[in-house]
Image 1 (tube, rainbow, N blue to C red):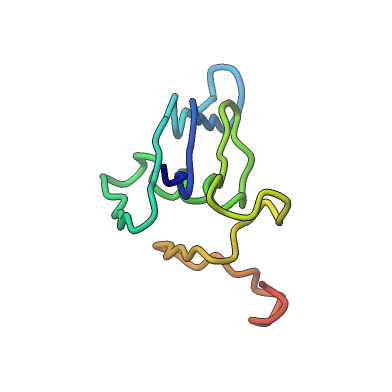
Image 2: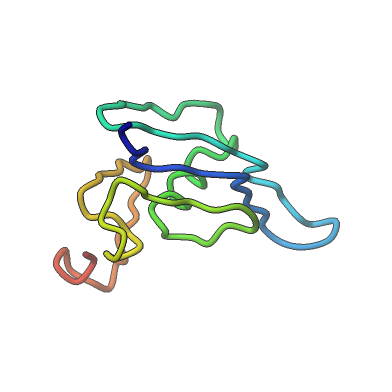
Length: 101
């Protein structure tokens, strides 16, 4: 049986606290298998970028987990063989291209 490339279980992200809290993602569970092609679509503010940031380990989930079982188990947490295309720039402006990797 082929291992999932990426798996999320109960993934959630909330920004802020108390009455000002904004739930960007709530209880998201999925598996992506080798060869899958996925387009994450939805209206503005629906959590698309938050989901991608959590998958890429650019942000830390409030709850749940993201795992990359098909990648080297002892390797880095952020997968190098997977590409993400974000809707907005995600590079740090003070760094050049090499320093942003």
